[in-house]
Image 1: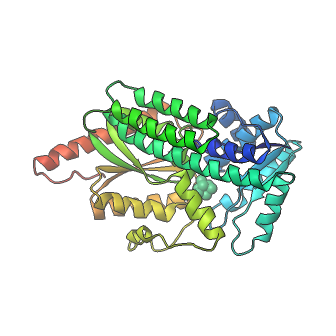
Image 2: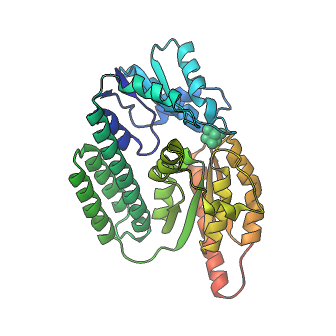
Length: 368
Ligand code: SF4
């Protein structure tokens, strides 16, 4: 069995560790590129959301490299993620691709389906290897997130432009190679020191990044927005991390330990119920950012993403009610770099102007 899975930011680092430690042969899709997106867009329905197209491109590229089994997460709820896997499987079949497609559906009270998919994937693997894989994968998922978080803090303060991005790439490569817990912990410790040591000064502004999980976590699909903002001197606070998503959406529901997320209550009055995906989180986190006195919020959403369209229609009211500026960016295969950079620069300029106005006691400029 030669297993593959789609990219989503740095998901490949922990996922590869889990599967390889369990004893499976992994065929990684090449890093997501223009070719990946072109392949996926060519074969996906035109109005499918961007992550589906990119994932499809990842599968096609991995199949070219010899993969024969695809792993994909399933989903429940009002958005299209619930039938993503099935749609992708049918597209691959229609293209004559001969491969197994394993969809890990969230258990929702019934573990039989999940257990049977796990048995199919790990058939022949030693339980000790699977457990060790899970432990190392979890440590790597946390390490990746911790280092990224520090890089977001360091980038707007870096003395030499581009240095933070170079360091984080090097650290991720080291993490990918690491096989021992001790080594992972050391990479994190030394990585944090290295990132912090080259950071001086203060950022010009603080922005919270909210929106749909895939485009928030995946730098290719969001056109490296965190790097771009950081290099403009803006400190970005990302509201979603992979390890946090694993705990809240996979581990806790699997063991029926689901804890209500109290910060979602902040959306009350603007949006009172879940609309699928991260729509409710987007609204709640925008309110939270305003109350924590961030300068602005950037909402990222794949074009045609239903939950984020709902959130985007509510955010102007949140912006007015809470006094925070919001920029919504819908992303798809036609999103051009120059247009995106122009909008970001204009938004940051406006935030800086608002800061000056506030300092001079003129109140906040309206974002209309
Ligand atoms: S949340 Fe949006 S982008 Fe993600 S699967 Fe659902 S509709 Fe598509």
